[in-house]
Length: 111
Ligand code: 5GP
Ligand code: ZN
Image: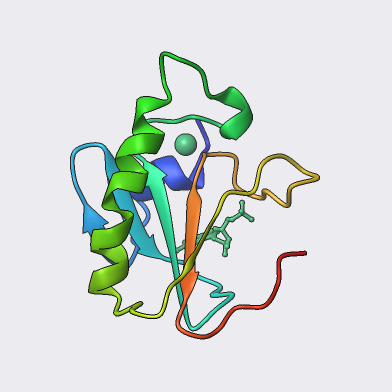
C-alpha cells in the first residue's frame, strides 16, 4: 500500500520522532501549523476516523492515553489542541488516521 504514514511508521521514510512504542508513533509535522505541531499515528493502517469500529478503535484510546506524556515532553504547559481531520470536507490529506497535537501559543478559534 502506498501510504506515507505507514512508511513513516516502518521507518522507510524518516521522521523526527517525539514518542514511539509498539502501537503508535508521534513525530514532528513537516509543515507546522503552530509553533509546536506533532502528528500522532497508529502503526497499523486505518484510513480515517470514518473507518473506526469496535474491533479497531482501542488504538485511539491508546494514543489519547499518551497525549499528556507527549505534551509534557514538548513543554506544552499552558494547554494544547488535539485535532483529527476526517475525509475531504474535514481537510484530511493523508489517509492514515492521525491526530495533530498543536500548541506553543494561544491558539485561535476553530474554523
Ligand atoms: P491532514 O491534512 O491529513 O490532517 O494532515 C496530514 C499532515 O501530515 C499535514 O499536516 C502534513 O504537513 C503532514 N505530512 C505530510 N507528509 C508528511 C511527511 O512526509 N512527513 C511529516 N513529518 N509530515 C507530513
Ligand atoms: Zn497507512
